[in-house]
Length: 71
Image (tube, rainbow, N blue to C red; front, side, top):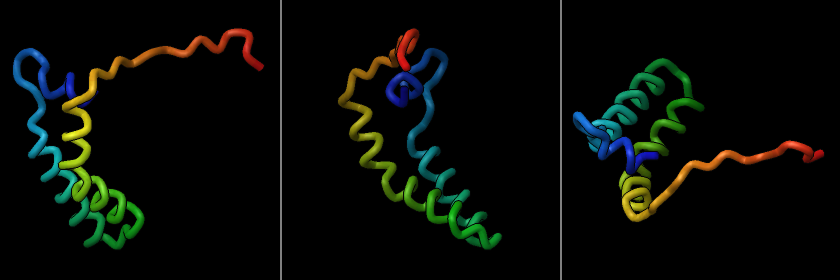
């Protein structure tokens, strides 16, 4: 999905801006005393390069699972 968002018609998502947003949200959460959220946003921001690298090389297709009759 990330690969498609970056290449969508009319202008894709700037991956660097997403990383900056994660850092901004970390600072807001940290300053507000929301430790759990701050850690999550920090983990996202610090892992963003690896996430985008992994997404760039994948041809991922979202599929639906047919769970009809499964118990």
